[in-house]
Image (tube, rainbow over all chains, first blue to last red; front, side, top):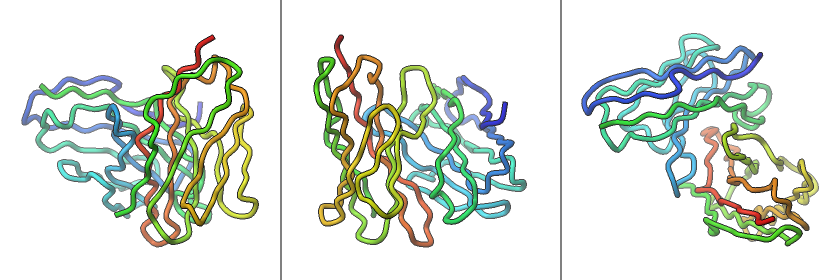
Length: 116
Length: 114
């Protein structure tokens, strides 16, 4: 089925470890974004991309890197995990027609990350 | 910095009660506005959106929202809630400038008692 696929669904890390959360979409969407969801804080934008080769920072980019080498993939890298990065991470995408991000977002199922 | 405020963090209603969830934003320029819903164990999905035109927009499942530009508000309403409306509701605002950042509010958890 077409959609946004996130892997892994669950991950436990130790402080200082690095890892990559994968996000792939097969809808040829230009706009992709990463959010983290924390209780009482809603979804906060980490990084986003309006097309291959273009990325930009969101509200809470520190401690995270992204790249967009293809239209389909938008991985999120944690360089040195910290307990404050314990959260549920959502990847989302939308068509690039018109204003980027103005179209309806399709969300992935989420990746639950725990940093000990 | 732009912010999106949802002042009601938790709302508890009985079935058939009316619902209004507040959403205010701080950006003064042109915006696109959204309400997303997350049912227990499910993905976030779009409830309704406002881009332009009639400020009263209707969405799925009997929900509607009114954009009041002078108040920077986009409140969500439903005249009669059902138990199945139990979910978390998120307001989101897209600035219509070159930043293209879609910013979400902190969410409102709605519990509808049967």
